[in-house]
Length: 138
Length: 150
View 1 (spheres, each protein chain N blue to C red):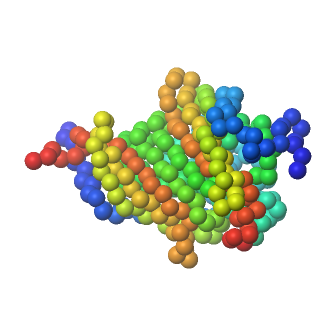
View 2 (cartoon, rainbow over the protein chains, first blue to last red; view 1 turned 180 degrees about the vertical axis):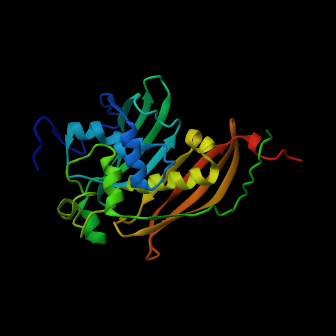
View 3 (cartoon, rainbow over the protein chains, first blue to last red; view 1 turned 30 degrees about the vertical axis):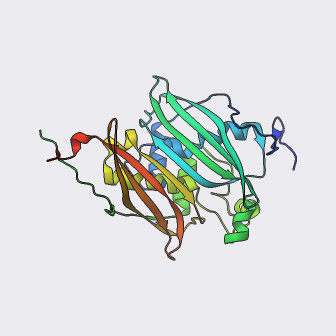
């Protein structure tokens, strides 16, 4: 595997726990929320931020790897985002571990909006050998 | 207007949530974040190459979102959207066509500084009876929503 242009090829051994990525800024619009609610079949769903996968956005911007699958995910709700408000995400490498011969990376992210409202926190364990899914489950 | 007291007890089963997965639902979930390129969630060939699966799978985050709904519907938007959390381990892929049932049981109620923390054990089960995810959710319900202790 070679790194995509402008990216670093992931060296799992060298990846540092605590590496913090540049703040990611985005907005959620009403249309995003409507489409999210259609996707999850829930008119009251209040945290469309989860589909934006913001904890791995900046990681994915920096690193090339062989992909991943979501092995575990924690989501903490503080305040539903308001459409049109800027959201600021700080994400970092919270942990990494080897389990049954597979490499995992744990990312964590906290989102606040332009008024300083705490929105949510997400922690994701990504298994970095996605081909294992097909081998096990087909 | 008076407070309508809520009643939660250790061991109570909460009302389950059932979701029928479709590729359209997955596409909307991914599309809501502006993702337009093919992924293991939206494109069969990509999934076959990346995951070695027969077809696409749903993001684990969709199951987390369903757990958030399970908790919110049982404990109320007012409490859950401010103090709620879910922690889910994804055990098996969830695929288009699957029907997933999310169930929960109250396993702990403890006093916190801002109310009573209710912890729920959550299971997600597919239509073949296999667990696709296990985890916990919690919410802090203000003490004022509980009937005064005798």
